[in-house]
Image 1 (spheres, rainbow, N blue to C red):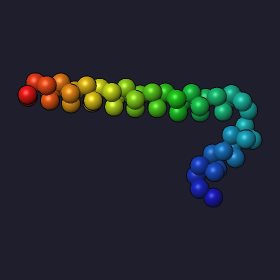
Image 2: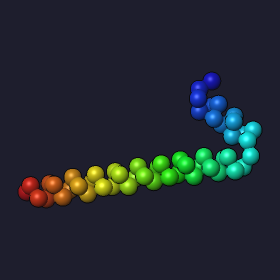
Image 3: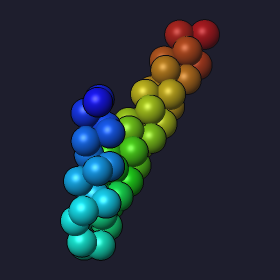
Amino acid sequence: MRFRDWVWVYLGMGGSFTRWAVLLFYGAVWGAGVVVVGLVAVLAMAMAVHRG
């Protein structure tokens, strides 16, 4: 079994609070990643405009 499978087995055995906590954690990490990608894109665009 892979690690992700073990995580889902654990979540199935655990309470709903654990499941929501993991979902919130993954949501926060995903949101932070989107923000970082957005900042990098804006910075790259600004550098391209400034260079041109």
